[in-house]
Image (cartoon, rainbow, N blue to C red):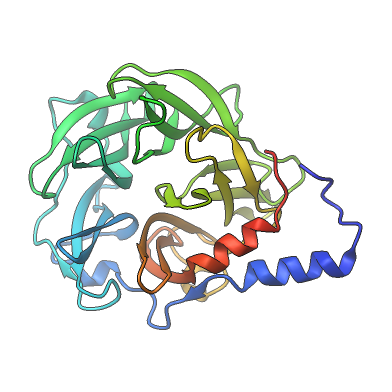
Length: 327
C-alpha cells in the first residue's frame, strides 16, 4: 500500500470528501428497536440480510433479558418500512450442538449458487469461546446445521457465494497471538477447512489499527468482490467502530485489488453514539437493487437497535478505483 501521507494534499482532501459522501442514513432510522419486538428483548441489532420472494428478509440478533442471543426474522416489501417480525425466534440454540449453549450472534447470509440454498454463518458462543457455525435453509423456517467450521476464537464470517476454483471460501476473523486480522480459508465440502491465510490485516496507526472484521456478506460486482469491513480504534474513552471498503479478485479472492485508506461510514447520529455499546456502527447485512443501483446496508447501531444506510453501488466502485492497491 502507498504511504499514508499523500503527496498532493488537495487530492487527499477530495478523496476523503468522496468517501464521506458515499452512504446516506435513512431518515427514519432506527428501523427496528427492542420496543418493536413481539416479545421481551433487551436489544435487537447486527442483522444478516437477503431477499426472499421479492422481499427483504433480515435475520436479526436479539439479546434476551438473560444476556443470551438468538436470531429472529423480520420481513419488509420495500426494505425500509412495515416490518413483519416473526412472533417467535427463528433460530435458537440447539442443545445437541454444545457450541451454541451461550447463544447465536451476528449472522451473514449468502445464496450458494452451486447448492441452490441459503447459507447462514453465525457466531456460536461455546465454553471455549466464540466460533463460526454454519446452517443452510431454503425457507428460513427449517435449517440444517453443520456445526462449527473453525476453532475459537473466531467471528465475523461469511461464505463467498460462488465456488472459487472448485472450493468454498470462508472469510472470517480469528484471534491469533492477540492479533485480529481478516483471514480467508478454503474447503472442498463445507466441513474440512485449510489453506488459511491473512486476507486483510490491521494497519498500525490507522483508524483500523486495533481490529478488523468482515461487515456484510461479500457482494459480487463486475470489478470484483466488494468487501465492507469494520475497523476498530481503541481510544482513551473506548473503542470506535467504523466502516471501510476493499475489492477482491472474483476468481482468486485472496488477492486484494483495492482498499480504502479512509473510513467511509462511522458513528455520528445520536442513535449510533449512545446505546448498549457507544460509538458503534456494525453492518452485517446488505441488499443490492441492480435495477436502481442501490446498495442498502443494515447495521447494528450502538449494539441495541437496527439502522439502514444507502449508497449508489456505482459510486462506491468509482471511489474504490481511486484507492490504493495492496493490503
